Image 1 (cartoon, rainbow, N blue to C red):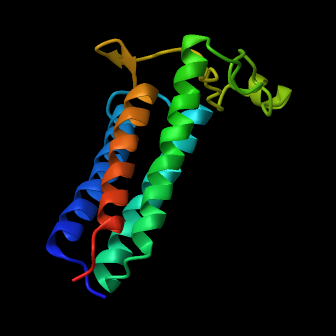
Image 2: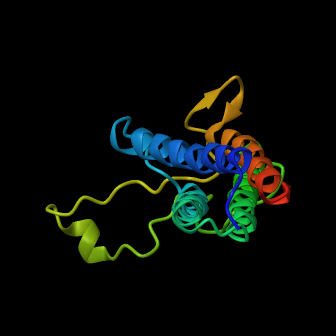
Length: 159
């Protein structure tokens, strides 16, 4: 079955929203110099999946993919909510993400002046926020909105 125009518009809004958040994350990293923590990186993968799902939906018109788009958006929203909770101290984060550790870096790496060993990025620190909400919090909020768009498109009657 073909997508209706409202379904197509909702799908475009949701998928392009994920693309915009992904582009923003890369801009903060590569232009702004704000290195991501492990949870930040995990939040990116479902957005990439949502963009891929958008492209598949547009190419094939398969409506069942809309449910996968919603799942991708809900997944990154969940990770973002967990990350925001770690930042706020509501619960514990990952063991290797909330301490100043250099696990995985050998003594040889530390003693080699030609190697750049960066300080680990903590998951429980808030490096940037807007209106009192961290990037992880904004990801959770916007991703929930995108999930609603995917779900709305999936639940609409076919043409």
